[in-house]
Structure formats: structure tokens, C-alpha cells
Image (cartoon, rainbow, N blue to C red; front, side, top):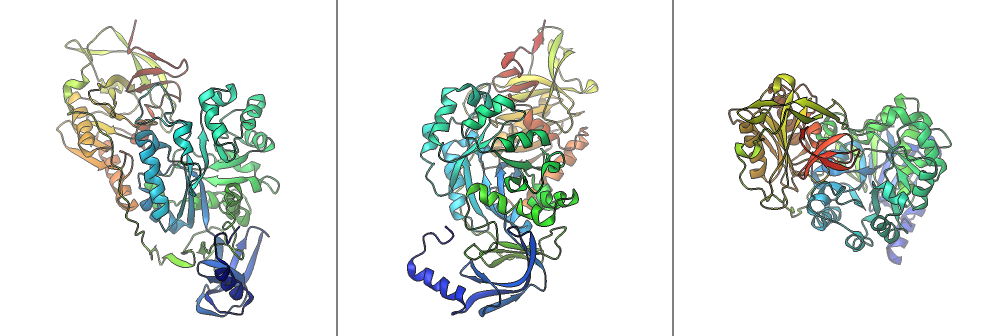
Length: 577
């Protein structure tokens, strides 16, 4: 119900304005509304009273705003994103997306939950209740930790999640990544499903088809953002799922899925980001990226806009947004053209929050930051010594633009009885350090493909448990980079062999910063430039580094517990007989 919670007298005030008996606070003149319910552009005025649309047509108002024939669309709704991917706290993320017309965000704080557990969820909900530029909602992270092969900062079971279920900002259970456990009936997975069976449950099921898909959907999963092609998406639509078409900074599926969008399928298809990096937010946009790309691929402009507004509103049960109709909140963006959609003005509950290329209302929420666990003691070069125990070693093979890795066997470079980096063959040391338990020692290994000729890179962004990861040519440079991140309480660092270090501090869980998106994007660009000077040709070496510790993506990975053979789901030694 759009006006839920309003007292009778307040409702009568709105009703009087809607009838035209009393003046509205605002009337927007000469608008061209791109209407998802008709598929048409309507040339009309519309009235707003206390943040609510009361009607279309010529209304008397205390203030009139002439839109001069510009196009208007309901505020966009992000249906699935891990905000931590932007490196921004939720208040700063709101400032980054509102200029692109996004007024509602449904987030899965999976990353911060793996680091801080309930403390991280509480922080996010405080943000959701305090931030004004966008409306935040949460899907509760369902897989914390993601794997027993690494050490996370927290464990969230069904009982832990249950206390959040009835929070007004919680909409359901986040992506159910353990689809084998769902299909097999694993008890702890199903405990969560049963607790949240009367809510939305987002899916995560690449290439799950046939009878496995039947079992997965039978569990109550309602959506999927991991379709690998149009045939898979059609089969999942036929099974009753909603399809989230993902186009993020890292994972991009729109071009291969957009062909299945037609007049029959679009009402259950929506655009989502999953991840969005700060530089993309500054230069490319947010959901406007998907909308305009869909238009380029031949999708009707109003339909493309609807897939970022009406469809997610219907999926999440938002009765007060998604289309600009009487009783809906006055969230909308204004564009000089229908195709492409380029917001020049954005309004939140009738108040202009972006215009003339800048924020006209800045986020004023003051939210206590939860800190970042860092139980590692001072790091030195001696921590990275690897005594020689044979001739051949396992090496993690990196691939540009992919989170998949190869499992390689290479001859070790031995010097003074120790295995060392060999930059001539692009084989360098890598280490992962448990940052949650004091006294832990790093697991050590080697990787190939990062391209460093000198220096080191370090980060606390290491999916999914976000321990401290460092890769480098010399033990000294690795110590410089890793210890700089340790002292910062988390972040990203590049270190030279001489000890010159550049750090982006991420004080919130080692994942996010309260700095502006422009500052973070500039600092990341500086870090990439510094990494390039050390030899890497990778476009985003920090992204490659962040996935080396993810033990659920094939083929060879390294966590704080050791080197992981992902296919066999077990640990393997560094040295090969």
C-alpha cells in the first residue's frame, strides 16, 4: 500500500490536493513521462505534495518547476549489489549513484558480514536508517563463511540471521551460493531456507538446469543473476524465477543475455550491477550503463528504463515506487533525451538532489564506523622465507580479465637453500595471512601472470574472507607492502624494493572508506600507475589479487590455511614430488 502508515487526517490532506481542492507544494510543468505501464511517453504536468505524487495534470501549487519538455522516469532501483565492491561506505555510495538516477538500493553486504559478522550487518542497517539520498534495503548474506577452506571473521547461522528477519529494511535472504547444498538437502543450508521461506530468496546458480534446477527452485529461490546464456535464462524464467541481468565492473553478462528480452519476458527481467568499482561510478555511471547499452542493442527505450525501475519494484514488492503514479514517492530523474538516458537533474521525494552537474543536497548522515579487525603483529622479510624442499612447485596461474586460475607445476628458483621469486619467468611469491586470530602465520606459495618485475602489492580485499594477501618479487618489498596495510587497519598498498609505499586506507572492515568516490577513484588510478611502473601490464592487478584467495572458483587458489585444489576441494602441498 503506497500510503501505509499515514493517519486519517494526513490522508485527507493528500486527497484534497489530489482532487484539486487544495494547492500542492510542487507542480512540475511540461514533463514528458516515460511510463512503463503504458510503454508510452505522456506529455503532462504532475503534482507533488510532501514527497508524494498526487496526480497528473494542471494543478495549482505553491511552487512550479518548468521541465521544458525534458523526459522524466521513475527513480532507478538497484536490485543486487555488494556495495563493498565500490570501496565506499553506504553514505558515500549514495552520493556516487544518485547523480545517475538511482534512488533505491537493495544490497547484499556479504563482504562486510564475512569480516565483522553481526557487527557489520548492524552497521549497514544503521546506514540504511540514516542515509537520505537513497533508500537502502538489505538481503541478508546467506553464506558466511563462504567456504571451510579459509578463515573468516565471523560465522552467521540461521539463528543469527533470524533476529534481522523482521527489520523493516530487510527483504529476505541473499544469494544462495551453496546450490549443491540446496539441491542435496544439506541441513544447515535448509535451516536458513526454512527460516526465510516466506520471504524473497535470491539465487546464485550458474549452469544449474534440468532436474537440479527443479530442486533448486522448489526450495523457494526466487531469482538468479548468474545466467551464462539466453537459453539458461529462458529455462529459469520457465521455472518461475526472476532474471537479474548483471552488468558490473567485473562480471558483464548483458550482451549475451539481452537477446532473450522480448514483450513476453521483460516483466520478469531486471538490470543489476552485482559489483561497481569507483572509477566506473565516476566515468561510466550506474544503472544507466545497463539501460543505455540495452537501448544500443535494440531494446525499446521505455522497456529498458522499466527494467531498472518497474521490474525490480514488482520483484521486491515496492508498492510506492517503480512508476510515477498517484500515491508513489516522487523519486525521478530528468533527461534531455529518451535515448540515451543521461540524467541532468535528480529528485528525491520531490527535492532536487542533483543538478547542474553537482549534488545539490549532500549526504549529512553521521554514522559511527565499526572499525576493522587486524590481529597481525609486525611483518618482516623473514615471514616470507620458503625453505627449499624439492625441485618443483605448484604455481597459481593468473588470467587477465578472469577470476579462474590454472594449476601449474614449475621448476623452483633456488637460492641459498630457499625458493625465491623468478620475475624473468613471471613467477613470484604470494602469501595470505589470517588477520582475525593473533599469532597466525602466513600460508606461502607462488603465482604466475601478475607481471611484477620488482616490488609488491598487498590488500585486505581477498574474497571471500578478506584476509591480508600480498604478492611480490622480494621478501623486503612484500614486508613493506603488507606491513603498511597492517598499520592502516586494512587497505591496498603498492611498495617498491626501496620501501616507498603508496596506500589506500580502508578503515571500515578493511573494505571501505568514508572518502568521496572521486578521491577513491583518483587514489586507485595512482595505485595502478605505481603497479604498472613495477612491471605489471594487467589493467586491474588488485582485482586479480583479490580473487586468488577464493577457494570456490577453479582451479588452484591459496587461503590463510594453505594451497587449495578447488576441483577436489582439498589442500595440496607447495612442493611436488
